[in-house]
Structures are given as C-alpha cells and as structure tokens.
Amino acid sequence: MLLISCPNCGSRDETEFHYGGQAHVPYPENPNDLSDREWAEFLFYRDNTKGAFAERWLHSTGCRQWFNMLRDTVTYDIQAVYPMGAPRPAGAPDALSVVVPKRPLKQPELIEQPGSAPGTAAPSTSTTAPEGATK
Image 1: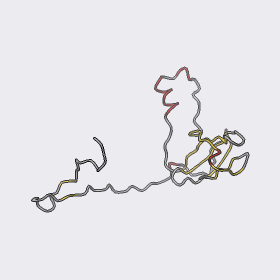
Image 2: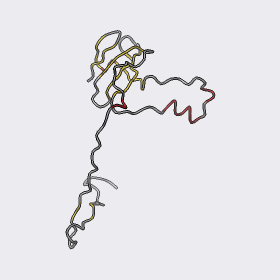
Image 3: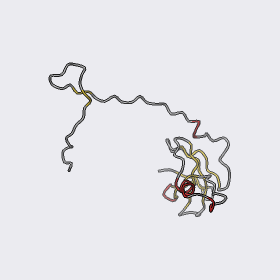
C-alpha cells in the first residue's frame, strides 16, 4: 500500500484516494474548432512514461479535494505533492531524463531433431496445447 500525503489532511492510506489521470493536460482553447481526431486525441491519448510522472489525485474519503502528485511509475516513489494549478516542481526529475538500459533479445531455444546434424536444429514450435486446455 502507498502512504499518500494529502496537502490538506496529511498522510493517509492509498485506499482513501482515487487516481484522476495525467496532470497538466490543457483544455483546448477552441474545442468547437477541433476535428474528430484532434478531439479524440485530447480525450483519450495520454503519456505512458517510465519514470517520473505527474498525476492528479482526489482525496475521496477525506477532504474531497484534488491535488497533483509526481510519482515514479517504476518504483512507486512519491517525489512531490502539490496543489492543483501549481506548476510541476522545478527540482523534480523529468521522465525523459531517465535512461532505461536495453536488454538483449532472448534467443529461441533450439531442439535437436532425431536424425538432424548437430547445430542445424530448428527453433522449438509446439503445436500441442497444455494439459487441461480446451480447443
């Protein structure tokens, strides 16, 4: 469980809060001028960053006030809590500055077929369903 520090009530258990999505998403100045695609992008497209991410939260069973939180999406560490309308804290790390090392791709396991020369096996491809599975 996360221990979230509400700016109005202090530290509380995460079960008292509701997630409200990405913070700092500006409302379009002229929504009537948007195409269907632009309107859909405003409504449904959000960042999905790895690392520091600005979120909106509602203290639903406490003060019932909205606030912003800067949280690491990998470690769940809460880096900052700040009121609605305030800019993202200046000292907070940016999600784009987080470097994620690339892992090498896993090579397929080779299975030697009876009668084949060593080193010429094909990648394993099983066509049988696991026991208990239905078709």
